Amino acid sequence: MKLKMDKQGLVPAVAQDINTGQVLMVGYMNPGSLKRTMEGGQVWFYSRSREDLWHKGEVSGHYLNVKEVWADCDGDTLLLKVIPDGPACHTGQVSCFFNHVESTPANEDYVHSDPGSGILDELYATIQDRKQKMPEGSYTTELLKGGVGRVAQKVTEEAGETAISAAMGDTKNLPQEVADLLYHTLVLMAASDVKPQQVWEVLKGRRR
Image (cartoon, rainbow, N blue to C red; front, side):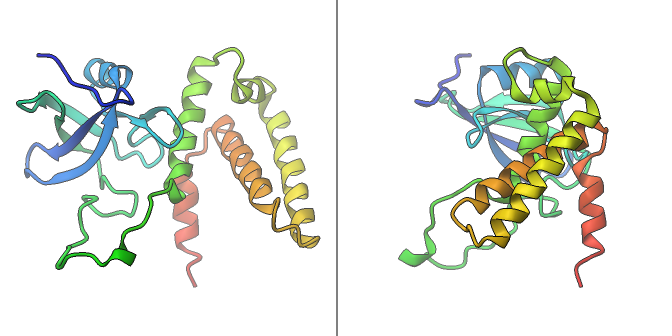
């Protein structure tokens, strides 16, 4: 069976609960992520937003355990029959498909997609991958080699720069500073073996 990849070298993959038949989510795979999925028994996707492999469930602990992999008649779509360890959607829903489309969307209802907050989950997964492999030439690897103390120092520096930008009303550079702070915070968490899900649980209690 030959798989047909798109112009980006990707193939869409539908994850379905093998016990209930419910469609859980759709992602994209490349040869590397499919290889890891087939050999490791858990789903790996390819993140188009950060152009890297993404271990589904790395952050939440809700892994998708693969039982069967099927290709459609044209070989351009994969069906992953899985047993989920928890909700597949980052919102906490069992499936990503929970929005009922009742009528044809108006023109203004069509929007261009962007990474959104889910990029934090993907970024942490990348950091964890760097932590395991420690590839040369990676800034994340360099940070992790410096130890928790070095990463903590960078978080302090980035927090200061973020606060200064906000205090000065520098809204042009503030997003960059906040992004730097979030990134280094995620590296610090990885270096300290703290999962984002632990932070999310704390934040849930602060919705007042």
